[in-house]
Image (cartoon, rainbow, N blue to C red; front, top):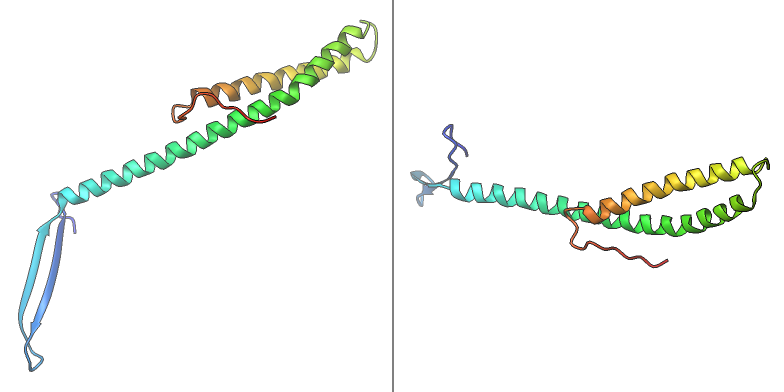
Amino acid sequence: MQTPDGRYWFNRGFLLINEEGSVFALVEFTMEITRQKKIEEATEKLQEQFYQSQKMESIGRLAGGIAHDLNNLLSPILGYGEMVLDDTPEEDFRRQPVEAILSAGKRAQALVRQLLAFSRNNPFSSSRSISTAS
């Protein structure tokens, strides 16, 4: 129980009963447990922070893995797209769709860079580099 002054107390009472079954005394035990309660609250807060940091580290690792996989997918798209664009004359009607593909690929590449930056700069991450199998 907490008192208005912010202190915590533990109370326990026991009835003492004689052979006839009558109560003949009440024994009460009271102990201040403010220090223990504060330690308990601080421990719970630290546990919550630890779990949050574990979640953030997992998200950073996931973001890094996804970014690397996306980068592996984008490399041939952009590479072959550039080759097709180089071989397509300016007046060819197919040039505009190829340019749209390359533009979308470059925007996706920018997103990949942001994901990689997040995973590397994640203050909760224990490792700064993330490698994934391709």
